[in-house]
View 1 (cartoon, rainbow, N blue to C red):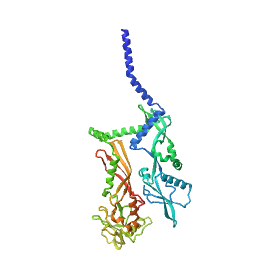
View 2: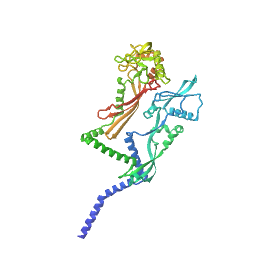
View 3: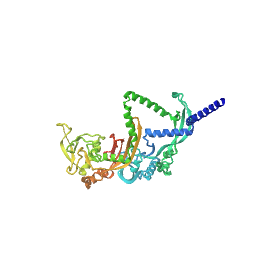
Length: 491
């Protein structure tokens, strides 16, 4: 009997060991994963970085870029500083400083790598015609630059975690009881990143020392806290606490109706739907830019936007153009009418687009008033052949645009309100079928704005939200377009 009891006890013991072995193994693995080792911190840092890209950058990489060097100031430059519209000119026969030589070397390197265009030109300087070199951004340089980057900043690689340089325990008085480590993380451009191929050229590294430093990697310090089975970035711990407080506040303020089963099913349905494809984005965006109501094909006449006049006499329905410039107005040196509008009106008169009539009785204001002024009235010279936009009397349409995309970026992320998709883009608009008047030799010779508009077109950047269910944009489009040259409208 005693022998049977011992056997039974032994079997129970073996059974307990067999049952508890997986639990013990799991406990060991969890304990092992939270030990302060370089391997564990490498995993934690990589997870942190992936989460940062996913939650704060929509899954898109964080890119380093080399700015187009604008200083020292060039000898001449465009008024516009927008992508595809700016230019910088440097006199060939002018003595240079070490700073200027470095700048020109960097511009030449970016030109050799295909991001800038370099052209030999002649400019009026100090009362004589002198040889100069002009640099401009091209499509490749714009595509490689972040949005709203002005002159341009050429991307050369994705910032990645290259390794752990060291770690040490840290005491935080405001978080007593937590086991915290200060971890030194090396961030840089991975040698396998294809985006950095152009920047690894020794000529590039010599011209741009900062690129060399970034590729080699830089050490930054981050705090990590030991958690349940893992190491967590201290900042993430604080954000999680803040999110929990915000969730509680929203639930208390709006109640639980926002989280009904129907709402959750709707969110799950959206999660199962794919985000937009590049082809979908291009089709949606192109359709909008070809819509005449967007007026992207307009050559705007004075009296609109940045070309003010003394008195606008334009009328809609039907569109009729007319603006007045008063003769007896005392103008300051900074006056926009004198500095920009009048020269442009004179240019349009020479081109035969507008005609000028000097009158003694121009009304000063829109109201019927005996207060009349002497001045010049500008109207369309040939309204029978030069058609105005039916909705905007200051617009001369150049016809339907051809849309050519430079880049499209799609962003899918998970937000507090559920899954979200958005996109951003860069594109060019060209006007390959302008109206008959725009082919006239006299018009093209005397209206350089039109000649450049037909040659260079417009540049546009934009972004919008995408509805995964309807496969349409949500309509919150934020877009900006400008002429791809140093236009009166841009400056």
